Image 1: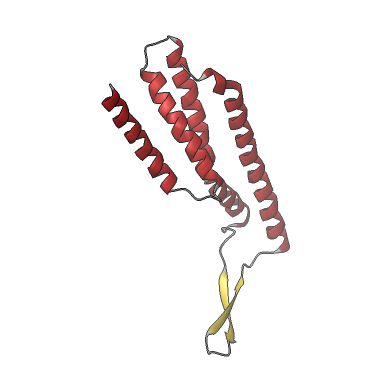
Image 2 (image 1 turned 90 degrees about the vertical axis):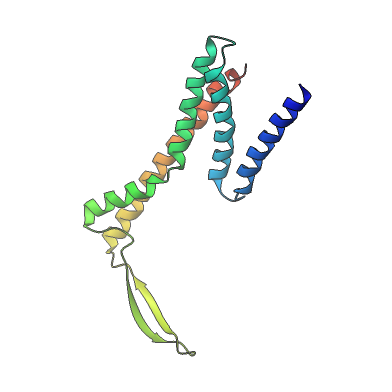
Length: 156
């Protein structure tokens, strides 16, 4: 029994090591990855456990939380914002052109970047950014409210 427990703990430590190895301290998505990792282990346990009839429901609830985390991390917000901008103005907001200004004292070409946006386009871009950031914040609130409402139920 002790040997089996040791190898289970070793396996778990390796799984956490792999997760921690990819850690970027400044990246909020890693925190979501860490919680998602733990919830996925719990989901697998509850989905396969026959200790209680409630465990299958817990597995479903955990799956919902994991899905919400994946949706939050997908980073499709920028893509959606860019597509909406393109529908309004016929080009993506990041389409820029470079203009050669001359050479610096070492003989290297010096460029400036012209995004070609009018004031209306810049204002629209900022409004779209605010709109999609608000949607992202809404999803974060929904996720953490869901965790708040259920997390104490998810133990055997």
